[in-house]
Image 1 (cartoon, rainbow, N blue to C red):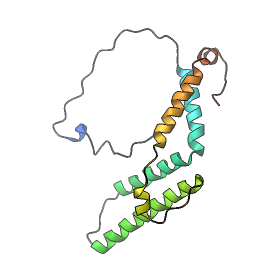
Image 2: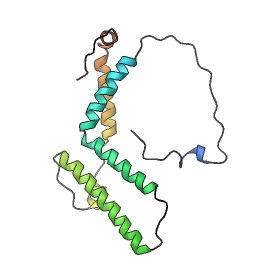
Image 3: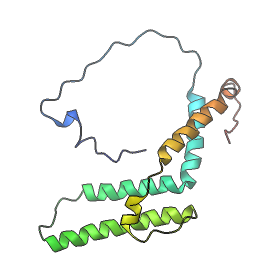
Image 4: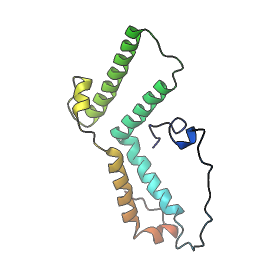
Length: 154
């Protein structure tokens, strides 16, 4: 997933005094098994889950909203205009959250304050756990899938 933090704005590379990149020589190793097919199956399973997951759709919408704000070239100096802009941003955030909650069968929130009081569920961590589970299911199937079987992980 794309990061909500813009790497071109944050980090050592944004500083004039940033150290140059260094490179470490590669080590010699032998490939035990080729994992391209396994990685393809895992990525396919993740994509299928992500398309229908309201949490991932919410994250994509949040990322787009942050990108829109970050890409603004100007900011009004008028305090009332700024307050209206902030109110609009908060209302849009609440709307996105209520859409996500509706898809989970949860009640809508009345205010952004109610949203801020809630403990965030880490759906990215949950998806990472699903990917690890896919890898575990593949453990017994890797050899078969690498020999031409096109079994799905589902």
